[in-house]
Length: 419
Picture 1: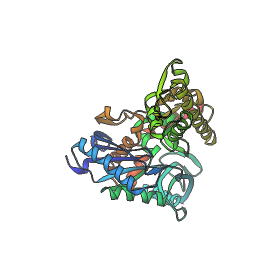
Picture 2 (picture 1 turned 180 degrees about the vertical axis):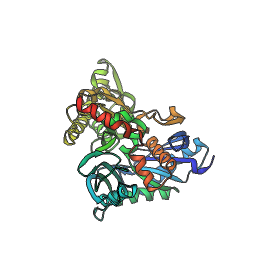
Picture 3 (picture 1 turned 30 degrees about the horizontal axis):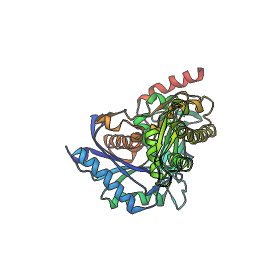
Picture 4 (picture 1 turned 60 degrees about the vertical axis):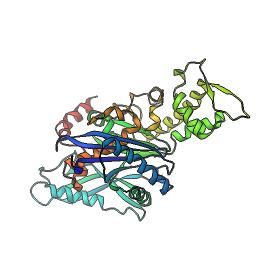
């Protein structure tokens, strides 16, 4: 096994760091697969809302998670693909226009128009993370996904630019470097998770990926195969834990344990007579509480988070049933019992938990939880990039789907006009 064929994904969360090591497999370069070889998990308190607050603690956590994954994989890695998220991420549209140089549109014309759309001032404190072409326009003809080979004189592109705060990105890279690894790519977490949990059909029809993490909730909306809207909300799993601390009079770590063992996000799922014993100090004596109370506290907060997400759908123009494929939940908090039931009630749409199972083989059962959606998506991203030659152009191929959608796009659009 050569080292070049290994890929590693690293998800730096606010409570845990997840690392996944995989080997490039499958039918290259058309359909790369990631064969999962090793998984590592380590506690992390050095990251808050996607920003590194404590470099030493984060470095320790990165080293611990990657060492565990390497031990399981029986191999060393040097390079990692790292996820990034948080409120410092912003996205906006940008347009580019060029005159076509020859009789028909060439790949060079497309590269030029993309370059024009990218050439916007990001400000001193932001760097470009992803540039995602939404659609091309040839001589006022809209909705073109690949204009190469078409005849026209004027070519336009609608581009979606995703930027991150430079200091946030630098501190993330620094933490990983201090642990002895190199960051090859930073990938937006909802984008990464989408590779592991969303099908092509879902992206085409219209789907929202809601990643409920420790300290922030990421929202990504996909439609017609492209990412259309991104948002980060500052309420997530840590707020649920804080509510349990307040409501039950327990410590932070005990509240976390209660949430893991007895938590439920949907009160009707819990048996009314069931009691749970609460951790207590010597002064408090032995204490119990109805499990229904624990569930009620969690239910209230998660309901509030989902209401904010629903408002985000409205703001993006995808409210009121405009997401036919519904909502997919990922992230560490998404594994709580009742999350799917509550989400169905709030969004009035189909909802499922996002278990990473697309494009992977090997130790698949080791990553069968929503919290692994991001690290598994990161190794799939890296695998696709290597399979497509690893250049800058390859990354856009990775992000924006391959050829098949071009054949079916006109048919799907025609169907969408009818339904």
